[in-house]
Image (cartoon, rainbow, N blue to C red):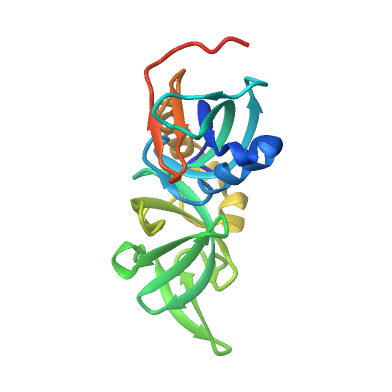
Length: 224
């Protein structure tokens, strides 16, 4: 699925001296405050991290008394959906004019009627609502179906996605997998566009202060 990437970053976490005998736990507690929130510095939602403490001896930094800084090297898993990316999610609700989806278990998405291609027809079968393709009888979308859809926009504050099922290479993932040859050309084009996004974080250093805010510093190399 697109929208996921791994980035390397240098971090400085500020820890109170009272936690000096439990620095690893204090660092992880501070880093956990970043999870499942959109971070402007990293341009994405932090889903997970793997960190290594660079300096065994922490130093009290001028201007931050009494906190001391702990330098970390982190590998971050980020969720950063952009327009025209293809995402996957589970349908949790259907109406005649909308499809509601959950992506990665935490981000909600909605596909409104104007963004559902005309080939899909809303039906009620055995009391359950579903969308059925007029041209492909077995292409069905109902509650519980895993679908692939195109991103139109992403609300960074609410972590809410507006999606589309207009492209032919969107819909039920199971059905698309059985007809993958029909969409191989468009998938390759989308993959190239995703690769062109590049890396998110280079060699810059970010600091996490006691208010869980991240600030970027000038580029510099940290000695091992």
